[in-house]
Image (cartoon, helix red, strand yellow):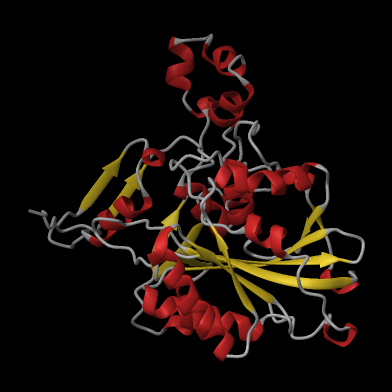
Length: 348
């Protein structure tokens, strides 16, 4: 039985260890039953993987190194929850103008602190600062400097520094391909963070380089997924090949064939690729191409989320792996566009 709390104040310690959905639920339980303004107060240590890093980043509290901006110390920001995303603004009026007077903006204040803001602790343990400074690099940057961007150097399959940003309109594109990783779930009480359907658009240049052009990400039931795929196809460059995954077994093949048929009838070129190999095996050509610095990307809002996923990918289920870059790079040789179509309909 779920308890529907009515609380006037939540005090949360080590908030970076909670899930975002839990904190959002706490916010929804705040009530004015007591003669006080409802408040949620949280303390946290910096963590790159935490939802709090995303909040602080989008609200403008962090600099390029993930450190708190001194001029933003104690500055009030406002937010509303739109779907599963936090939308931030400098004033309440900005949000009400965009989302309506009844959107219910809430305020947020970030008060950064380091050990130097705790004189009682330092007076009792004069060696505490040196202990923090002597921690391994990542922990020192997190716990002493207060950096929300500090994280372990990836020793896995992919590093973002292998990729370069490019201007797509300056490239000599010969083919486009968008590959999809399909899911059919919406957030629920039992599964608050389900997999997303993700479509990766890649281009191949005349020089044999690959460019990640666009990443579409959404959560929808299977009935809506196909509509979104067709809508995306209408916005992609003409001649873009569409790749859909074919799960093992007769049922997987039948489902893929049905989607292929629907795309072809809508006027798009689509193929299916089997997914009978592990994701690690399928990712190896991409990792090799990236390490050889053959892959570039277009600067856009999706960059950080997508590149984070690629860096964290290790084949396990502990991290999200909702991307189809392996299908794109393995299939982008297949379609040669007429020269007049190479730069058509670039709407992303």
